[in-house]
Length: 221
Image (cartoon, rainbow, N blue to C red; front, side):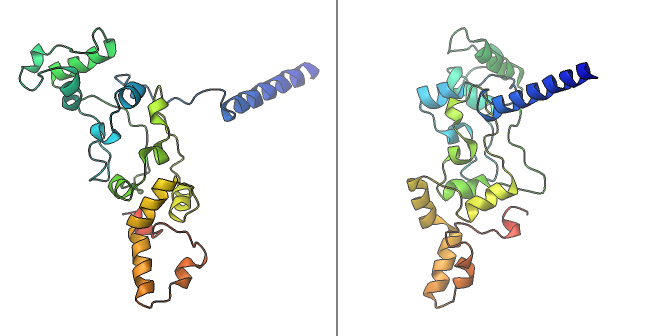
């Protein structure tokens, strides 16, 4: 019995230690392995590429969009638009095994089967276009992607997390806050109602710093 208790005690200690290791940042979170190991630091930091170059629908559609094979070879295979894909050759970076995978997808006429990192329940939607238009930075929700070796889900994306931001509880950068205050449809609507003589105190009583609507149809549509 004593031996069993000792073993159980050791197991508990190891479990707690492992939990503390992860909670205290002892291990870097890692997202799913991708078909091509896309180096965000190289593209974002070294080459100063904007997020919306690859995620090209983020400014005009609910989905951010994933980089297509054609988009990628536009940079990595010089003259790709004028030559037969079967004859495509990697331009740069020379000798890169990961970039060669890209070229092979192009030669085969196949889309890159990217693995989605951020998954919401089917009954919930995150409209990227409205968040980008209102002035939020990508990193506010997605974290320091430019530092990630393998992109992972940085924020919980849970309903409470979204509500906290909409109600003004989540801290934004000074520049973001200024843009949101200027562009938010909710803030403009409340201001217009107040200017028209409507009593808006009930709207502002519980959450005086609210930035956006929390109506169910905003995310559940």
